[in-house]
Length: 273
Image (cartoon, rainbow, N blue to C red):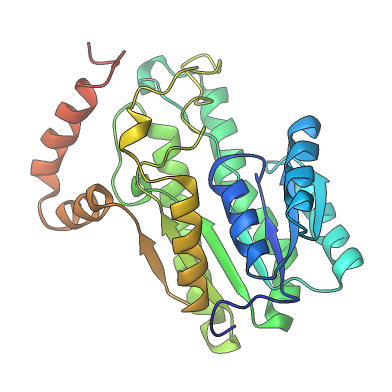
């Protein structure tokens, strides 16, 4: 897959009805890829498919819940039945949460792990045989939280650390088989994942506690992902703040504990206030 030409490559993107997933569909589609997109909301899925078709892109929408093993198996089967191959899997489906662990309903913790971690495991498991045959790419949309935990994000952080460990292990298993594994940590991106973040009892947060205008756009993130996939890069850490957090956590984790606490305490509606 040298260069930026993905003609006739089949790309599956989970959770592609908004944010980074939707942007990846547009960007990879524009580079020539045939698209398989999933989402849990049938109306949003239909709208996203219509938007992509309006751009003259070939797309197969599949209604699927990332946290369901059966849905992931069906997703891989339908993609293969329709296009005959799978070249790239972008594990993008994810949910966030924001509550102190002492207040958090464990059902919320399970839901976050089911979608973010198990969803990635299921999708990768059922797409892997086809990706091995194609010598393709597996991409995980992780987070800076996969390198550095933040307060009020225990379940989200755990899911992303688990995802990173899973891919590190898998990458070494397939490295001599021509399969590329890329882990992406977008940093703070203006996508709707924070608006739909789950609170302590599992309800949606609503408005994001951060200033979205200061963040990298989903389109910029998608273009970085396309480029990193073409170059078959191992890791992609985006935004200056993100790179700094990963660096500092490696060398001065104790000091970073205090910095992270103070940063989160400044957030609107911070659980520390």
